[in-house]
Image (cartoon, rainbow, N blue to C red; front, side, top):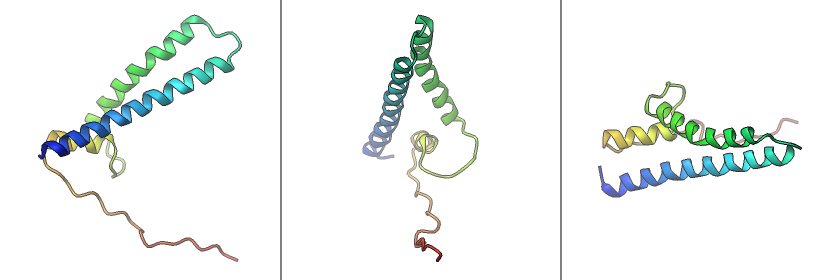
Amino acid sequence: MDPKFVQLLQAQLLAVVGDYYETMTFVINKNIISNKRPQTWQVEQAYQNIPQTIIQMTAQAANPVPVQQGSGIADILKLLQSGQPQQPPAQPGGDWVWTPTP
């Protein structure tokens, strides 16, 4: 596999993990602010769960349950492990246009 392609896939994985971490931090902060008197252990546990969830998501991506096709984390990891670039799946209904009924 082309080294530039591998770097691109690794950058995409890092971006997904970074976005997840940023989103979860925002959600935790919002929940803490909305709670009148959060307990210290609740705050600590919420922040400790983020890295554990990332590890769990990585494990699930390495051994995915076949549910749908797409270009998710599991597909990126498969490409990195196989070393062979694959064609993206065709999107069904690309010419479909919604028209409202009277």
